[in-house]
Length: 298
Image (cartoon, rainbow, N blue to C red; front, top):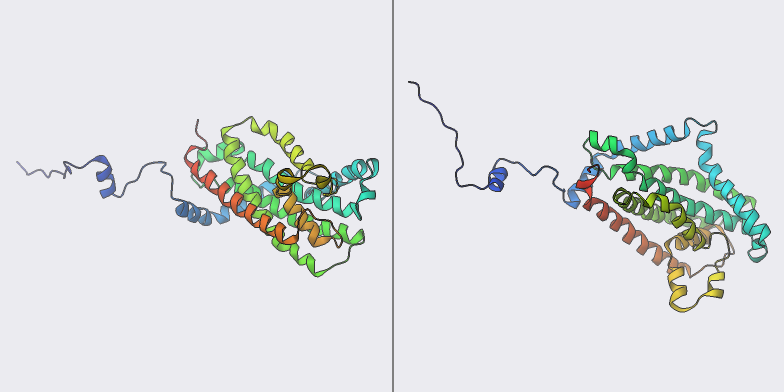
């Protein structure tokens, strides 16, 4: 009778030790934050391609196509100018109210668009999530990249509006670049936060229009920022002036308008902008990463 070989049974080893010895890991294990960041970098081409596809599909069926990226904030600014500038007399309180209003509308809509698309980034792509394995943060990052591209184009249109309304080109226009970078990272973090929160609480999507409208009115988009000091004081005024959207809007106004009354000094605004970017940018990324295992389940 031929001899029979018997495989080693590894008697006495726990399942965890046996798995480690054979190079196995738990299915669906949450990667460490550095590993997750490296995975996203490895998928950077997918993120870019996905954002381009979303942009094409969103505007490809319209006659004006990408022109709507610029027309939307212009139309909004025109509507707000008629109501707050002409009917309510805002143009009499603020020099160059048209440019002042357009800057606020363009900058605010940048963040608003990221919040809206970010909220739907997971729930709107469940089929893709359940079919393929990839870091889920790719989806809100892709949505944010679309809005960043749109806003870069809109900024050039905004500069044209500012010039037409009589503002000169100054060296402070260079501030637009760092201000845009800071707001972009803030928006990415906010989009990541809303992507996870929107996947957990589906009803928040219905509340977003009301939340954003309240945020719009609290960010001095449609009226002079000096009205806050007329109505508030102490800690209430400090809280309102620390509003991140007000901070980013004020930085852009400081860059493009020669005479603009700001909520705070430029130094304070830059400090606040950096703090908001770091807190929301990193915080939103960590918050989304912590929920990586649960997306697309249930």
